[in-house]
Amino acid sequence: MKNKRLEALSNWLIEATISDIQDKFATSEITSKDLVLMYLDRISRFDYSGCSINSILEVNPEALHIAAALDKERKEKGPRGPLHGIPVLIKDNIDTHDKMHTSAGSLALANSVAAKDSHVATMLREAGAIILGKTNMTEWANFMTTGMPTGYSSRGGQVLNPYGPGKFEVGGSSAGSGASIAANFATVAVGTETSGSILSPASQNSLVGIKPTVGLISRRGIIPISHSQDTAGPMTRTVKDAAILLTSLASKDEQDPITLTSGELATTDFSQFLDLNGLNGARIGIAREGYFDYLSEEKRVVMDQAIEKLKDLGATVIDHVVIPSTKADWTHDVLTYEFKTDLNAYLQTLDPSISIRSLQDVIEFNLKHEERTLRYGQKLLEEAEATSGTLIETTYIQALEKDIYMSTEQGIDYTLLEHMLDAIVFPNNIGAGIPAKAGYPSITVPAGYTPEGEPVGITFTGTAYSEPTLIPLAYSFEQATKHRIPPVLHEEK
Image (cartoon, rainbow, N blue to C red):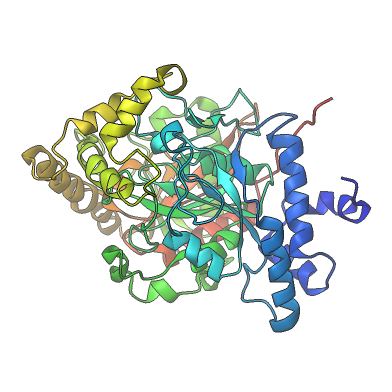
């Protein structure tokens, strides 16, 4: 950087938390405009060149101007709250009504600018956050085909894991949100999850990821897969930052009826649940059967050490708890049927200049540009298009009923009640499927690294709206271990 003052602060910027930044704002050591410039410098050196993480699709051209306006507001009125002037990256399936596009990684929507902000973007702007840019993602949130690498999109190409570019899987589908925050390209990010898409890239990039209860954050203005399972959520470097971001995102939205079930949590300050002794006296069940089997020996060692740490911190650990529905004959039928209905409804809201108005239009666009769009095919898109789009099929209704029953009464809730647990522990995102089908929350936290340096996450899962229970567990573990270390990035020579 040519700005010597900012260059001197460049080392401080790495791993800077929301609180760290607000402290420097308060003493006028830096401004929001300074902060945006510093992050843009890192993006230019490491995301678009150097090790080329490829995590960000585009930067908000108004970011510096928004930052300057927020700096002025701070001087005149004081900060709105902890997110005032904080740069946030959001996934490319979250609508913003500005000069950025929202495409879900698809070339079919590469020129689409949303007619209005998503509820998520609205809440961020109201909190004083700066939406710095849109992150690359697995195309159509990894519901396009089978065999597509996580983090790949036809619009943006392949996102790399900063801990081992081209070596370690980056996780999906919120790959860009995960890789960018791991690499310190912004303070925090927002991802989305249908099943594992926050937890996977968070654990693979040594981050904290909160997949909230479906209903805590409005789904309005997010390119959908499934109204039964979709949710946005925080992806950050610390539990405290995740709690702060979650506080700003959570709210009731009359246009998204599921949010009306969130009760007082819609206006809760989740940072009040940051308890250093949160694990002391907690009852934690370890779901090994059907989950730990997928781990390499190196990752199993990391998880076993993490479990011993839970005990050291005062938790009662019930090992080998068995979730009755673990080996059920699970399908993705609910997603297949809901995708067509939900996507068609979203596409109808696009600006008239966008010719893509239905799932069938997407499929036909891809066929016309197959060299660029169908590197891995579009099997799941075609399967969804083959449904009626009316959600009246017996197969769908029976699958929905089964998913709800087996994930709750014969899944998470059964296991929690059977062993009187506060939470169930899974490795990485391997147990994401059952709570995803239930719409239940999970929080993943860095648990350590393999000898090769690949991150491993420990994930705490609970029942509906149990975020106040999960956050202290995650915070207690994080603060006692402080496993996260930033990746080493290399510039162009």
